[in-house]
Structure formats: C-alpha cells, structure tokens
Image 1 (cartoon, rainbow, N blue to C red):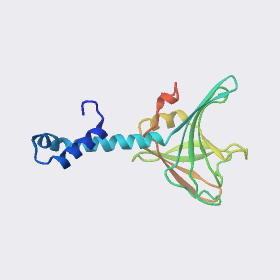
Image 2: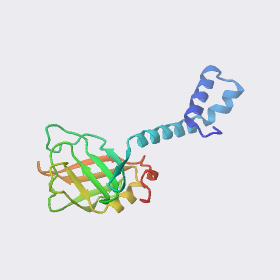
Image 3: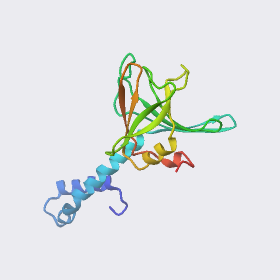
Image 4: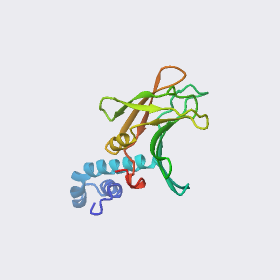
Length: 190
C-alpha cells in the first residue's frame, strides 16, 4: 500500500485473510481491503484503456510524423462486406500539419464536399463538428475539421461517440474508449 501498488496490495491482503482469518493481522487488513480492491480495479482498467492506443513515430518529409490511433469499441456496419472497427487517428505531420480523421475498413463515408458529425464526450449531449472526405480511393478517410477541439475534449473524457454519414444510407455510430490517451506521445497538442 505504501508504494501505491494496489493490485499487489489486494493480492496480499486477500491471501492474508484466506490463510490467517481471525488473526490480529487479518483484523488490521480486513477493514481496508474493499478500498484497496477498488483502487486495484481502477488501476487495471486504466492499464486496459492505455493499451487501446497505438502510437507511431516515422520519418516523413523533412521531419517526423507522430500519430495516436485507436479502434472503435465495437465493429460498425458501414456498408462493407462485414461490420468492422472504425479507426480514429490523431496525426502531426511536418508538411500536412495536424489533423484528426476516421478510417473505415469497408464501406464509405457520405461526406464528399463536407458534412456535420455528431460528437459526444462521456454522457454530455452531442455537438456538431464539421468534417470532409477527400476525393481519393487510397484510403477511406474522413477528416474532422476541429481537431484541436476534439483533442481538448478527448483529454478530459473516457468515452467518445461519433455519428457519421455513410454511403450505404443513414448514419452510424462509432464509440471509442479514449480514457487511456497519453498526451505526452503527441508533443505540443496540450
């Protein structure tokens, strides 16, 4: 507990109670074990959320491109051959500068010439954000214009929901568990 290693403290506390019930040591440990267990679960959940993010640093042009990417919590039917996860990418490129965009594995966005997304953080009401789909078939991507606002809100949130239009008709929702984002991986964004 002194080292704030809640998972190890929980294991030792539970083992002590199981092996030596009714002892003076068990009487000291038992009242605080529920709080230690809660902190251990929170630490495990934070580790899980952190592991959802992928970070990359690659040479690009006359500098380095950095990116942070995460896949949607669940597959989404976007009109492709089968439902697939949606990827959210935050990118800092030496020539193309900063951007945030969604990538589909199948189907396509209905956002040529621009569109409005509904973006919600945690339990807050959704707000509109402008987006656009480039006229290219190299990657099925849609750029979110207010990448700074998206980043700022993501840094405070646990969950991000984005409703986006698809060519198959209607809108789809991608949910991202963003609570593990490491802002240090993207210098200058905070």
